[in-house]
Image (tube, rainbow, N blue to C red):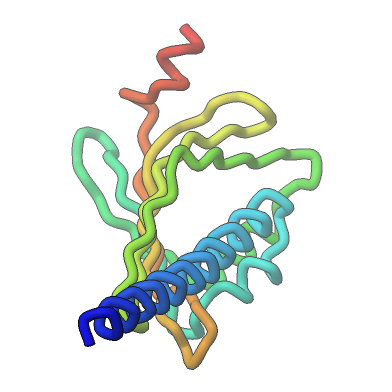
Amino acid sequence: MKLFLSYFMFFFVFTITAQKNIEEEAIREVIATFFKGLHKGDSAVISKTFHKDIKIQTTTTQKGKKILVTEAKTKLLTGIAAKDPKHVYFEKLLAINVQIDGNLASVWTPYEFYFNGTFSHCGANSFQLFNNNGLWQITYLIDMRRRTNCKALQNQK
């Protein structure tokens, strides 16, 4: 009986771990697709990662005041689609931390942003995703941008 319980527990833990790995990989693929679209300036690719009711915000500091700006999905997608093809956007992710609980996931990605190969700014993105009946979609995206206390900026001096 003890042997049976040991096998059962091993199988149960293995199955749960495997399922979590499958879900995490699916979430990472959504994030990778989002950034592929950003780097290519392809709003259609990015749009496929969004839930229809996504909320997009940016937090920054202007004139010493911390502000929160909400951006419409259409404005973001139009801006990406209008990107000059000569301009190269590259957001280098420094880490991808995925947390999952059921049909909710949170992804934290600190980054360095480069424009035409030159360091521009750093910060972090926070993505909230929803498993919409088997399809992970971004429901909320907030990012923070700064030009100080960035490792890449310090390395360029």
